[in-house]
Image 1: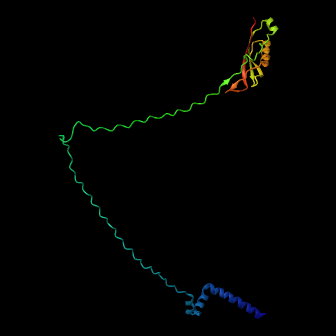
Image 2: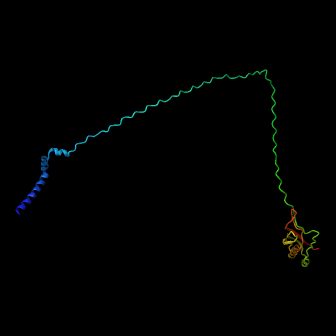
Image 3: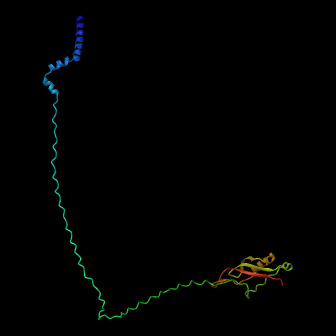
Length: 217
């Protein structure tokens, strides 16, 4: 036990001594004395010499090209010409008061007017007729009641005359003012025969106005 205690005390004392030596700088001095100077010199790295780069050789400058000087062209001087002065005296060889005859002017061309062709004449139209002698249409009958009442007047009937001479349609165009007279005229026109109308000599169906008068004698 005493031996172990002594070893422990020695170790502790050694550590305490080492700490004290480290704080006071004694350990550093001992190391400096023990370690040779040459060993310490190895840890010191010598500074490397700085190498200065060599500048590139200067390039030769191009030789200047001499400019060609073009001499100005000489301007020819204008020599003044002598002005001609008219002689006021007429020459004896020149005839005065005589002019040469001028050639006649060419005749003016008269513009030719081309007449446009006249438009074709419209085809001739012949209206239907109800008064031909060979038709023999009877006059319309006078209504007895209209005679007693004194009814009279003029009726215009508009009828469609076919190419065969018959009236296929009829209507009152102008009334007489009396229904009995108008209806009598309408029935009469539908019964009559007619000469058909023609266009350029060709029969054609046409509308035709037929006047019928009712007059008391």
